[in-house]
Length: 171
DNA sequence: CAGAAGATCGGG
DNA sequence: CCGATCTTCTGC
Image 1: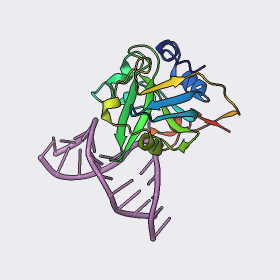
Image 2: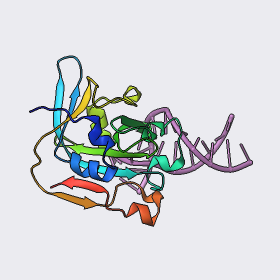
Image 3: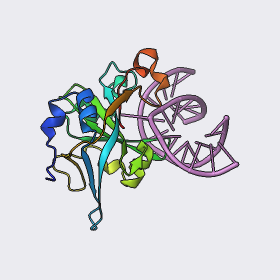
Image 4: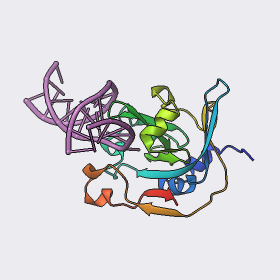
């Protein structure tokens, strides 16, 4: 019980596998003041490499996207619309930029709201999920069925990529 | 260096 | 439907 998922899970699998298999797993956030949030992941999206025009890494390796080019198991956070911190987990091996966006957990739906609840900020960029003392993932039993849909909010990515069924939702 | 747009949300 | 709010990238 309460066993943390090690980094090889993120490194040895691609973003599609991780996105689907994180559904039902438990996201843990320890605020360090005695308050701990534990909630099962119920919605994810995969962003898959340099070809995927919806993936920030398709723009190349920049200070912002650098973490996605590294080995999996690290956190990629970025600020969107000037106010929301998006929580992503890097997957795959070095130089295979991929990430999984966490869009919702049982007690918080929506990536922007989730970032707010977890009190994320730039200091989480590059955080290691295997060793962090403030955020990590634990194994847990899934209850329900996973459905797939197109990803949300990426109309700019073009027909090919915006229609990929790379969003996973627990029902 | 100015300008635009963004993996969103909440109010009207 | 639209504004909030600011980082990042692009183009001149």
